[in-house]
Picture 1: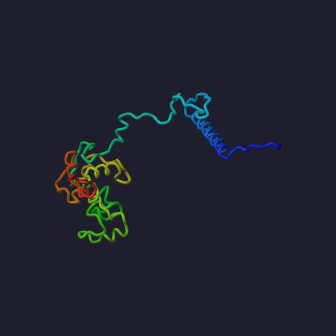
Picture 2: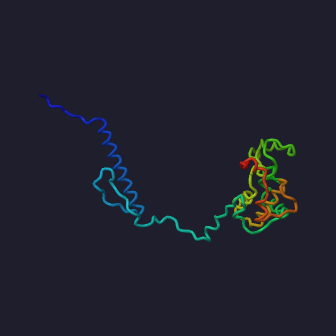
Picture 3: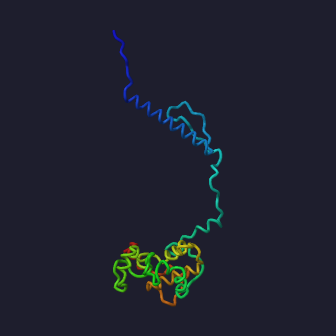
Length: 219
């Protein structure tokens, strides 16, 4: 009677290949982990767990802890209710002079010309009190939106100016200067009187037009 040869089924062959691939990945992982300071125990006689990680033997040596004083320079978020606002104050008159020095070159003399974001006026392609707006937007499309009309909280204005302005020297302004610039821009958007000043108490009380567009009010 002729001898019958038994070939492995495709299923058993593919299972073997998958198991071999998994073991190869585990071995490569073990080699990599040895370079990071993690110790590996000897493989246990289990087909499902070829290696076992123990607690790290030492730190990887990347980075170092920061002190409270060092972290303070980055903890500058201002919340809508005014939390995080620093001491200080600034007036519309002071802000006008600061705007001419630090802001007009990018945002325009009146805050509408650009090429950077438009700071003053309503949103949209057309403004009846700003008849040249379509021409400016055609050249600088970013100007279709206005910070004064779009942003929902006055405190965001302070946060952004302190964090990112002026463009060539962010975080270089003192708190009094940021309050003054915020006051001037809110005045230019008809949200403050010309003789007004702002501080940590009065700034959060300014109601922005954008609040109605971006926040659902409770009925």
